[in-house]
Image (tube, rainbow, N blue to C red; front, side):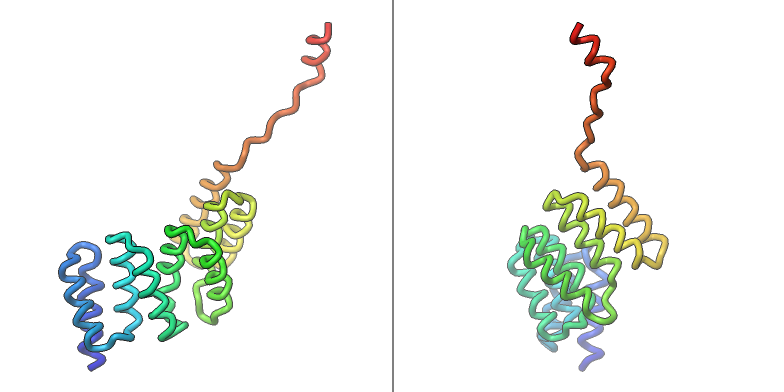
Length: 175
């Protein structure tokens, strides 16, 4: 039966996001055979978050997948995204902090998400510190490029430092 469930999950993954009717049909079949399949629950959460904008429903699917298997790493990034979109910042930070402690989790992605969290909170210096950590844990060039772009974007949001007025101008204005 596991093979049949996996076939439906693969069909859903292959069609996402281009043929949502096929995706939903395949996911419903997969979940009818195994309602605890973490890949199917994760993709169902993605459909609800990314296409239907039903963040609470998506969060429910992600939590269900994580309750089934805390090592369902396919959930982590998508769950954090929906928490950030839904402005559940405390929950996002708590989950990221937990996920970083899980052996085998992608630390670079998690630190990157934490940088985005602090960027959204307008804590740019703190965000840059997490970009630095993400960079430290990045081991492929493509993601390194993404991290560097994030760093540049955040740096662009830092308040500009005001230049002190020169003393010569002050002396002229006093005369």
